[in-house]
Image (cartoon, rainbow, N blue to C red; front, side):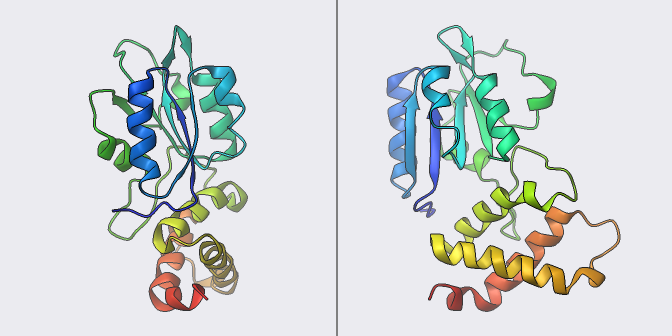
Length: 198
């Protein structure tokens, strides 16, 4: 079972049975559930605390895109979860996964946290390639998934940024900032992850 202890996940879903299933699935991994919210207004109350989100596209006839925009501006990963196949996703939000409601909770997890072999977490939102501040939420989330402990994860992000400053002249030409920082984080977690837990 994946460990999402302390991670704030916003669930925006107007079908209560579906919302309850998602909430149970993610809370069993230790996540803190925000909502479930059944309206755009309810969801708006939680966007500042969310660290990841599952968004039903059609909320009783209203589109969830204003919530997606807020999350995108904060660099928060999210997935669309919809029962409608004919709703067009705005071009600027097409980076996010768009899953059918017939998809299981495990598939939602995999879309929200697509971890590659290197333990990299790829968010739905593509930050500017060299904007470290925009990458911080994703780095923090990746660290949470690697270590499972909030304080240790923050220490891992700090060590990663410190190491990046020291290694700036060794960065490969053309390598994206995100991939470079994730590589450094993976190496630090492997070498010193246990020490960061104390």
